[in-house]
Length: 191
Image 1: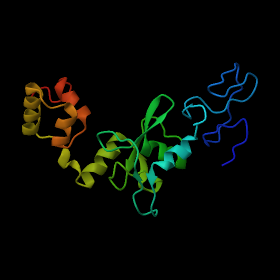
Image 2 (image 1 turned 180 degrees about the vertical axis):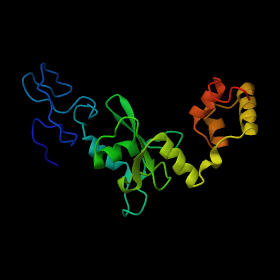
Image 3 (image 1 turned 60 degrees about the vertical axis):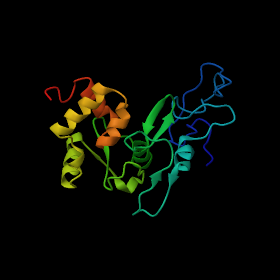
Image 4 (image 1 turned 135 degrees about the vertical axis):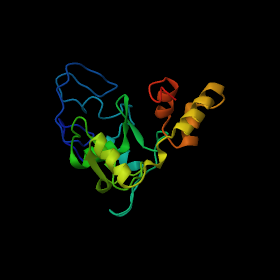
């Protein structure tokens, strides 16, 4: 992919700003267009690759009907993540953005396939949190919702120590953030 000077080299198609200073590490020359928009690429001299190229290197592609599984780093919940600047971005969100454009504020990227590792844009759709919950209930994925008994068991495991919140989350099939909110008394206060 040959991207003209003055356009972000990550392949997003956006014009870059004119650099006000010299920065050899990032390839900035005062008075010349910047190499990329801040945060669109990881800057390592001699190893800089466009985000698009880095992203697809971690994907096992199949047909449009198949899940394209993420082979890179993943969160405990199974969602792929990739570094973009100094942030970690969920792989399905980046896949959606590269295919369809920006995600409106307050919208979630949901999966038709219910596979958190999938980054096939054809399997992704936008929705609100409520849309995502409705989809979960319609597909009967809500078996992972915690019961009072399970929460009591989780609280006992937390009190005993010996297991991390991640380990407890794996045992009960929930994300470690759910366990953390139970531990802090944010959720399930009265149990």
